[in-house]
Image 1 (cartoon, rainbow, N blue to C red):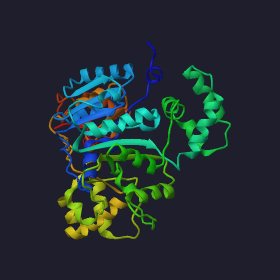
Image 2 (image 1 turned 45 degrees about the vertical axis):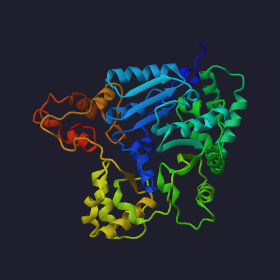
Image 3 (image 1 turned 135 degrees about the vertical axis):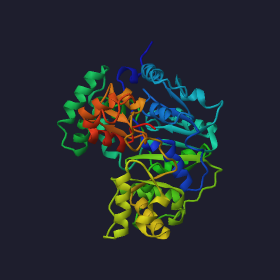
Image 4 (image 1 turned 45 degrees about the horizontal axis):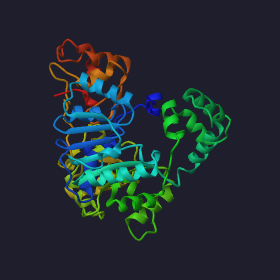
Amino acid sequence: MRLNSYDRVPYRTFPRRQTHPNRLAAVATLFGMTPAPVAHCRVLEIGCGAGGNLIPLAYHLPVSHFTGIDLARQPIAAARRVARDLQLRNLDLRVADLRDLVSGSPEFDYIFAHGLYSWIPPGVRDALLDLCRQRLAPQGVAFVSYNAYPGRYPRQMLREILLRHTRGIGDPAALLAESRRLLALLPHEEAAALLEQEDDILFHDDLAPINHPVWFHEFAAHAARHNLQYLGEADPHEMFDPREIPHRDLLQREQYLDFLKLRRFRQTLLCRSEVKLSHDVDSGCMDRFLFSDNPHGRRLPGDDPVVEFVTQALHDASPLPVEFRELIPYAGAPDALREVLFSLLIAGCVDLHVYHFPCQEEVTARPRASRLARYQAAHSDTVTNACHIPVQLDPAARKLLLRLDGSHTRSALAAHRSTLSFLARMALLEL
């Protein structure tokens, strides 16, 4: 049997907050949809690999149902072992071609296709969007990520150089070694960035036989041909910009944003074409959401104390989200809070949520870490918390987390008080 390239060079998979049903539901709600409840939904991930993204979702959303497919057998086998060890009954993992799922049932409320669209042939790209159209529930949301122009041009240049240099080399190890040797000689910042990539990312993302970036307008038109429409971005702040942008409609504005930002990668959300959307959002809709700190956003200009109070409250609660009503005291009044939160959203300083992530926020009499986190800590120093965020543990925290099965009392763990508090604050303890 011929091995899939992902069998030959395993590709690590990680939790991606942008694919969490909570994120997709929040963006859908922002623009006028009524998405399925996060705690009780049906999810399909196409190209799930070893389940690094899907398994934590299935663990933390036990009433929802998850299906993951991949062409590579070995990653699916590895994912099935983990699912079996964690006794997950709401997760179906299959070796399957997405083209075989275009028709059938059930419908899915959320579909993820991360790192797929740009790396598959044209006919399979058609099948991917056809699957999204045929299998999405009426208020369903599809996540599709892809390489985008114009920002992708420098990386594509280096890719073409590397493919020409390594043509005829079939062994992955030799191909990677030759690629790195040439990259080290190239006086280009993108070459230096590629050298920093791990082997699996360099091999599958940049040296893959197919890597097809597109202009946003091409992607949107492709989706429209399959009766899908542009909903938004998984990071909605990417849709806002303070500059005057020439545009006649939403799609042209998004294309011009790519021009101005030299965007190289998109995480786009789609829905059925018949869904009525409203992209004219303002501060008046902020009451519907919960909010969490996003430390990667740009700082708002000025020294408004209300902004500082709200920002500090979000920082103190991070990574857990905070309800709108809980933030009102920090702003003084609901209207003031709406304006602050909307400004923070536009600046990328907050993430929107529609879901409370259940976890134990305080250290209880018999603290217990999640089974998922304990399982992951036995194999790695990085674990996934209840908010679908990777948390890196130092040796002391990792050792302690492995002991937190509920059999040890808080008093017996008194010497580890600060580490216990850290694990609770990172949303790693269970109710």
